[in-house]
Length: 174
Image (cartoon, rainbow, N blue to C red; front, side, top):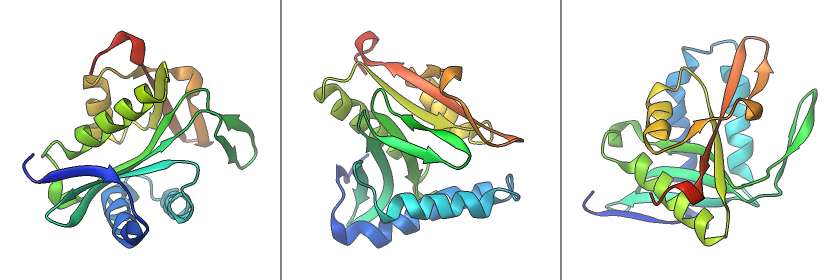
């Protein structure tokens, strides 16, 4: 991964982060046509104000090629027609790698950075969410030790399950 830098995002990264994230998730428009526009709006809303998350980027040759959000414990998420959820541990969200930069270990590097930051904060576990149609990400999470945590699942629509995953940091030295 020569030339790859993982760092905290800066204000002047916002446009590049938005472009990378939308281009990375655009492939799911075809597999979730009834839900894509709402999902896309959710992505844009999350990126418009990332606080209290840490926004982390992967940069190569001066260009943002990947990005992720790491939310701290205690963050409260509201969902339409469902009770709010308060995070018990740090949560990784919107991990995205530019399509032209995939297959180079950038997603795994961003994930490892999240895990290191969570450990430094004293967290004993990290969670994330994914869906069956996100096969590449799901496989990476499982290879890195994340396990299904069905108690974290939620259903933004009757025909859509967002699956919870958890990694106990005490059990791994990744």
